[in-house]
Image 1: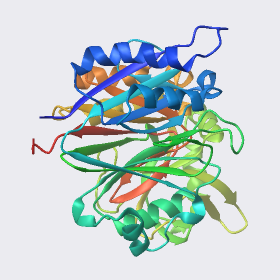
Image 2: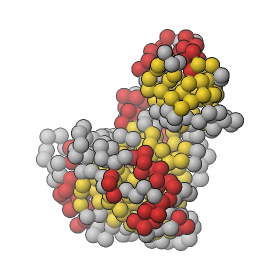
Image 3: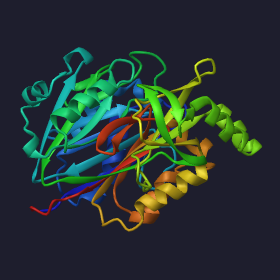
Image 4: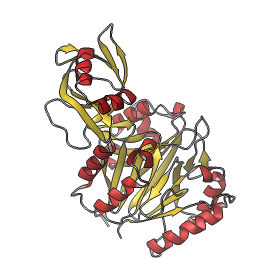
Length: 390
């Protein structure tokens, strides 16, 4: 018996009080039509601000509707599924996963293991189990970079994807859904093992400016030399060579793309980080990533046309998937692309009308060059498939 997925998208009528039971009932109508009698083992929920006041009641309603399912989820600045509803207030994805084992760890930051053996003990899971991890975390209360580094060390070959909760503005305003209720801080870590695999796609969506350069001198996050010259001098030359519109865009959001030396990166293989500061006295440039001498670097800016082209290229020619998880930055919505649900339409155009669910996050988690990293203004996807055991 293969994996079976279904999604639902529900809106709250403007001005009406939120009734959690009605929302779940409306979602179940959509889901039941797709599941054909199969019982969900997993429920993933993304709830936007109109629903968050009723988050605890929503969890209770989900538990009554699907009493044996594992429930996880997050608050969201916006959410979407594969249907035709733009800007839904609630998105639910369910999965019937007959040959998949599910477990959930709900952790505070101080509970996160720092050594690989700590993860093996806490999760009671060996790397040989080849797990798939879905991480949903509160950005105010979890040291995400440290989390990913230690989890990578414990499970170097395991795929880790997810997003940071959004929709809140201050600590304790985000919501994470767990099997036992809702929390307003920490990490929800869903582990899937067995007859499931995922193909990750990471799409930062940048347009490169100027020539490809080589890092010739650096200290951690400080860029000192490019092509054997002072980094600031090279930056000034690249900036001067830009068109005026590109200069203005670079001023508003200066970025660098990084990749391994000696290879032209394919779509999804460039790590994009923010250019943080310029120290003209030292000739140095601060970058939001630890640098390595010899790696390739190119200055860049976010660009909706480049983002669309990159996502299309990443999706082209992929083998069929059973479902898709999508985590997209809150900055990549309608204001960026000029239309709502743009990425959803690109995914559907490339993969067909398969179950899809995602949310606009405060940070996206996904692999680049063998490391799981926290991204911003990026779209990460997981194409879910069976291993063929069933």
